Length: 305
Image (cartoon, rainbow, N blue to C red; front, top):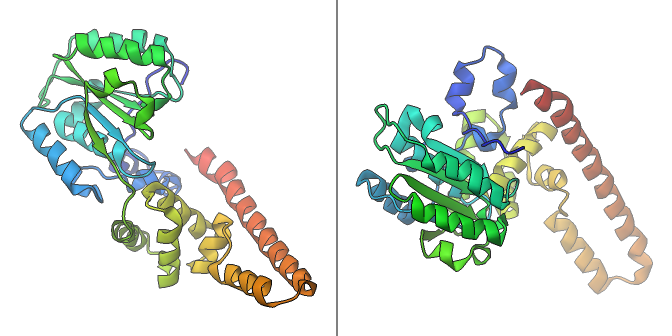
C-alpha cells in the first residue's frame, strides 16, 4: 500500500453509472458486485447485525472487534454500517486500512493518529464521529497494537475504531477489552444457497441442482469462496454442474473417491494402473481449466480494470 490509506471500494451502482465501457461491468468480481450495500442485505448473523443496527440508530456505536473465519460478512457488515452513518460523506469520514499490508507501529503513529486527530465536519452526515476500519488486525505487530490502544484511548470522543480479524487470540487483551466483540461463525448451508441463488438469477446462469450443492459443500461456510468458485466455473463451463465445479477447483469428485475406495477394498493391486490413469486424466483436465482461467484474468480482467 506504500503508506497510503486504502480507498473505500465504490458501490457497484457507482461503477456502472460512471463508465460507458461495458467491460467494467463484465469484469467486476462478483464478490464486490454482490457485496451487501446495507445491513438488511447481509446474508446471515441477524442477531449481530440487528444489535449493531440498533446501536447505530441510537448513536451509541462502540469500538468494534469483529472476528471469525474469512468470507463470513465481517467487512461487509462494517462497510454497511459506515454507509448508514455517513451516507455520501463516507469517503471523507472513514479511514480503511489493511493491517496485513501495513502492520508496523509507524502506520498507527502516522496515518491512524493523523486521521483521528483532525477536526471532522459532518456536512449533513448523521454523525460527526469518524470511523477507522482496520482489516486483518491480527496481523499487526504487538508494538503497533499497544500504540493503537493508546490512540483509541486518546481519541474515543471523536473516532470509533472497528477491528476485523480471523484469529482473535492474536489481538492483545488490552485492545479486546476496549471493543465490543462479535464472532462471525461460518455461514450455514441455507444462507449460502439462498445468496448463490440470488446471484445465479441475476447473472442468468445455467446451474444444476447438483452444481449448486457442490458449491455449497466446497465453500465450507465461506461466502467469498462460494462466489469466486461460481464465477470461475462460469468462465470455464457454459453449464455449471457438479463435475464442472469439482474440475474447476481441482477437487476430486465424490464418485471418483467412492470408486478408488471400492478398488482399494475389493480389488487386487493389479488394478492400480486403472486408478493411476483415472487420476492422471483428471489432473490434466484440472490444470488445463485452471490455465484458461488464469489467462482470462491476466489478459482480460486486469487490463479492463
